[in-house]
Structure formats: structure tokens, C-alpha cells
Image (tube, rainbow over all chains, first blue to last red; front, side, top):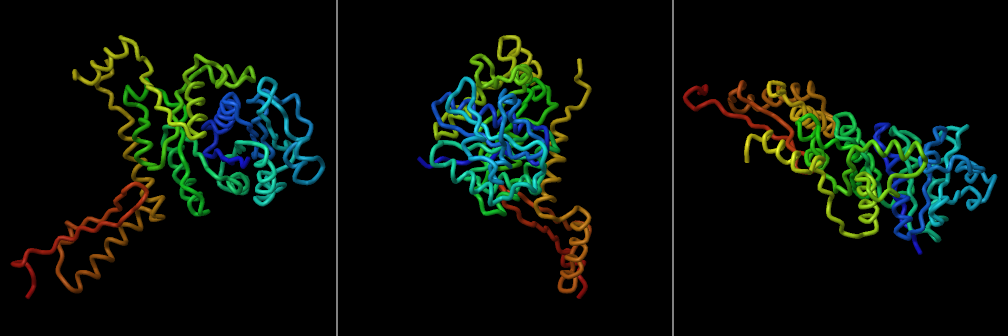
Length: 267
Length: 81
């Protein structure tokens, strides 16, 4: 087995990198894949809480890199998904504790026994970001449909291409369909047109994402959630499956359609 | 009900488009203006151009960019001999 490493990054903070990493990792594991998620945000550990594994941490990424434990000892197994692991970030150190070549070395070891290595990048374009993309076979950019997030995404695309990596792919997170319909949020197609990279998913804004994070149980495990479905679809696409994009009409019922017709002035 | 209020998404897209053009080209809007003036100056040494109608912009095609200058010449009857 030669696992694939995928880094999730965004430039801007708060767009949902950690949520996406946790949910896509979870979804890949439910598809039967062997997955390791690495929190590369040294000093600001968070992937552990989103995955609900915060109480089981003994060792972290910096312990591995500095030889205080074996790689296996820092890998926390998920409670419900035995093929999903987390390597947490250190909380008491900073980004300089790990180098890009350390990351490459850790990922190379993990490739032998796992299908996917998902790396949650910190925000920004400095050391932590460099660490996160160094081992990436594939880079996925998370953005929100707003000016600052898309602008940062564009910068990141440029930086990834400058590293002579493959052109990144895109996830548009937190799309509010009713705002798009009202003409007050940039539509997914417009973001895509401006960034001009391949889209692998659109995740609708969904209150239940926060609810599931509160509980420490990723939304990807919830059958009925649209956001959960979006993350599951992304996971399937990452395995090479061709999954059609969700119809994100938001209010897809009768009333929704009627009000859409009224708004567009007939048609 | 909210008909009179202008939608903000088209404005956001337009602003974003311009910001991205200048970010990608690493060419701030002010430098574009200088570039235009210098271009007019150089070309005017050889042929008379209609300075007011010159337009220079960066066009996008996917992630490719090109600088497009549209430089109308003065009509022949106005040209110096």
C-alpha cells in the first residue's frame, strides 16, 4: 500500500479547515479506508476536539519528531472507527518545533500502512503552512464565498504552484444558499470562475455542524445532514469516484421554487 | 419588499475580480497607471496616438493572464506631417 497525503489549507483562518479535515477523514474511514489525520497547527491544537479525541492524548507530533515516542504511540485511534487515527499537534510548542523535512519523514512512514494521510494546515503562509504542504501529494484549498477568503485562497494557489506541486483542488465551505438566492452571497460558480481550479465539493452552511462539533462527533457520521452528505461526497471523490454535486437549492420545496420564480421576475 | 436594495454579491464579485488580477500580476493599480503613461510616451515617439482613448488592462483566461493594450492612433488628417 502506498497511501496518499492530502493537505487542507486556506490562507485565511476560520474557514473550516479543521472541520473539513475531521469530516473527510471520518467519511473516508467509513468507506473502509485506513486514515491518519495529522494536526499541523503546532501550538493551537484543535483537530483533537473536533474529532472528539481530546481526552486520549498522551504524545503528539513534536514528541514523534523529537524522538520521545514511537510514531505508533502518538497515533490515537478513533472510538467508533478503528481505521481512523489522529496525530495531535503539540500544545505547548510552536511551529518551529517541526520542519518541512520532519513532516515528509513522518508521512513517508505512514504511507506504508494507510490509504490516506490528511494534514490539517494552520492559517497563514509561513512556517506552519510550509510544514503542512511539504509532504502533500495533493493540496485541497478550503474557502468561504466571501472576498477575503477567496482572495487568500488565490494567494495560496499561487504559493502551492510555486512549490511545483500539482494545482490544488477546491472546497467551498459554508455556502448559504438562501443568501446566494437573495443575491447577497457570491455564488459557488462565481468563486470557481475566479479561482479557476478544480472543484471537489461545496458544503452548505449548516447549524448542525456546530452541534456535532459540540458533541465531538463529526457531522459526516450523520446520515441526514446535508453538510455531512457534502463531506461524504468529497471523501468519495478523493477515492476517485465520480459523484454528482449536491443540488443545493436550500429551500428546494414548493415554496422555495415559487419564491425563486418571483424573484427572477417570471421565467 | 427589499426590491429597492441593491444586491451585494455582484459588487463583491467585481471587487474580488479586480483584486485578484492585481494580486496575481503583483501589479498594484497605481503602477498600472504609470505603465500606461510610459507606454503612451514610448509609442508617441514613433506614431501619434489618441492618448485619451488608450486603455490598458489585464485579461484573465482561467489562471493565465495577459496584458492587453488598446492604443487608438490619431486619425490621419489630424496627424502631424
